[in-house]
Image (cartoon, rainbow, N blue to C red; front, side):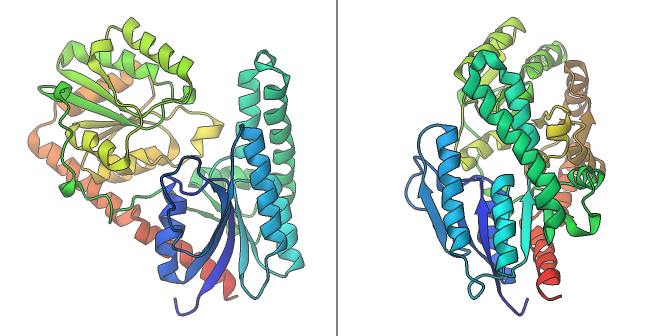
Amino acid sequence: MGVSFRLLYLTVETWPTFRADVAVLFGKYLPHHGIHSDIVTGETPASEGAVPWEAGAAFLCKVSGGNVKMRLTMFLHGLRHLFGATPDRYDAIQVRDMPVLGVFGLLTARLKRLPFFYWMSYPVPEGQIALARERGLSAGLIKFAVPWTCGRVGRFVLYRIVLPRANHVFVQSERMKQDMVARGIAAARMTPVPMGIHLEDCLPAEIVPASNSRLAGRRVLVYLGTLERPRRIERLFEMLALVKRQVPQALLVLAGDTVDDVHRAWLKGQAQNAGVADDVLWTGWLPTREAWRYVKAAEIGLSPFPSGFLLDSASPTKVPEYLAFGLPVVCNNNPDQAAVISASGAGRCVPYTADDFADAVCELLELDGQSRSNMRASGQRYVAENRDYRLLANMVARQYESIFLK
C-alpha cells in the first residue's frame, strides 16, 4: 500500500489483550500495510509492565471495581477521545463490540466527515440478555437488571442505528454475516474476518513437549481454553470414560480455567462421578508458550463449542492452533470449525456428545503412522494458506483501502 491511514480504534478489550485479532492483526501486521491505529480502551488490571501498542498511540484509562464500574469508566474514556478526534489526524473512527458507544462513534464520524466502521466479534446484546436470563432474579435485582437493560438497549441501537449506517462492518465469520443479512444489513458492506494464527510466533519446532511426569506412558488428549459453563466441559469427562474402555492409557489435559470457583469445583465433581478424576490433568491458565508445550505433548486436540445463536457465529481459535502444531482435531459442528475440518481433512467434526467425541477420538488414535503424517501435513498447509495473520491482514488492508480510496 503506497499511502497510510490512521484509525481511532475504540475497543472493549483492555490492553494488553490475548485477543489476536487486536494484538496481532491491528497491533503488528496492519501497520505493514499502512493501516495504523490509536487504541482507546482500559488498561488491563495487574498487567506486568507496559506493553507497547506498536500501531500508534495507546490511550488507556485505569479500570477497577466491578464490571459495571469498569464499563462506565471505559465508556466515558471513549467519549472524551471521540470528541477530541480531529480529521487532520484520523482517517476513520472504528468501534469494536460496544453498541452504545458505537452510536456516539457514528455521530462523531458524521459530524467530522469521517468514515465509520464497526467491528463485531460477538453478538454482545444477545450475550448480555442471555446472561441476565441465566442469572435470574435469584442473583439479585441489580445483577439481573444491568445486563438485561444493557442488552435490550444495545440490541436496539446496534441493529437499528449503528450497523445500518456504518460505512463498513467487519464480522467474525460467514455465519455472522448471514445472521446480519437476515437483519437487513447489506452484505456488500460486511467483511468476515475469521480468527487466525500468528505463525511467526507459533513455531512448533521450537516448542519442547511438556515434561510433566503424569504424561509419561499416556496417550494425551488436550483441551486448550476456557472452562466456563457454556463450553459444557463435563461432557469431556463422559467421553474420556468411554475412550478408556478401548484406550486405557488415555489422559485428558485441561489447559485453561474458569473464574467461577463454584463451577470449577462442580466440574471436578463431575470428573469424579465419571470415574476419570485420576485421568484428568488440570493445569489452570498458563502462559501461551507453556500451554503450547502441552499441545506439543498431545496426540489429539479437542475443541468443543456447543451450538446456539451466541456461539454459532464465532470463529474458534483452537482448531487452527492445533492444526498449526500438526495435531489432529476432534471438534463439534460449529460452522467455522466444520468448514476448517472439511477443507483441511485434518480431523473429525461430530456432534458434541460423549459417544460421538469418544468414537472420533478412538478412530484417530488408531490411525497408522502414514495417515497421521498426511493429516498433520494437510492441517499445517491449510493454516499457512488460509489462517496466517499475514494473509488475513492483507485481506483486511485491501478492504480498508477500497473504502478510503473511493
